[in-house]
Image (tube, rainbow over all chains, first blue to last red; front, side):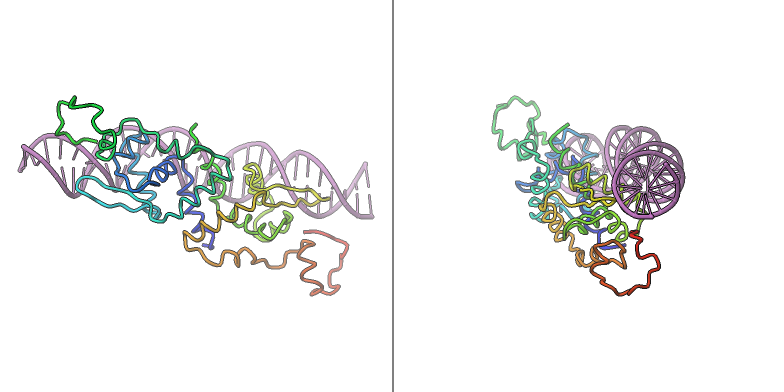
Length: 129
Length: 129
DNA sequence: AAACTATATTCAAAAATCTGAATGAAGCGC
DNA sequence: GCGCTTCATTCAGATTTTTGAATATAGTTT
């Protein structure tokens, strides 16, 4: 109707704790859905739903690579806006919380964790996430 | 619960067309409720409700002067955030729309309109808004 | 004090959103 | 092809938000 509907819709998609967490998780670059699912400790279907919401609003875009789908933030200015919101609310250690992730088995994380579990897995060929 | 609740709540109070309009109306300085009511073309109770919402969230503060109550934005950084949201959504002429106001009878507007209606009012002593 | 004006609050119905379960679709390796 | 893995969609119940009406509060003027 009026010109306030566009920014309203945009702000509404941001105004959700899990979606905020997803956006912050993408601050360092693209991530696959399985990584984000491990991060949120939610069911995959739920995470996919929220990602779809963000995607429809144009905040994130996806890229398919084999079985995996990688999401990225389309416009880095979004982070400037989120930072402003945090500054205004006095929220702290958001970045730290976004990084909290216990043992995500996705390939990206596996590379970082190196070989803590050296050859302990029976089914090492299993690339499950 | 987690540290995303604060910014989420903050963004939720922003994510509303009429509340956005109210904030933009206050960009030029404080305004009385009667002025804002005329601007939104809504019932006074509704406007007061939305103002109360913004006030509880700490985005605006009020000042009583006689019968009237004047509202102001507490932190100008809010406008930077709103501008960022508009830029990201490609919203235009927000400022112009915020100024659209047909014949508000509040004292501030009356002063601007000068004496277009020169002595036509029967009850000139009546300061109704 | 009485009448009037400006603003705030309460309450319930309507609308939108959130959440989770079930299910669907598509790529990969054997 | 078949089974497995990753991700997406649909659907319905639960919860929250939105909206408007009625009503209350408080200052002003006479």
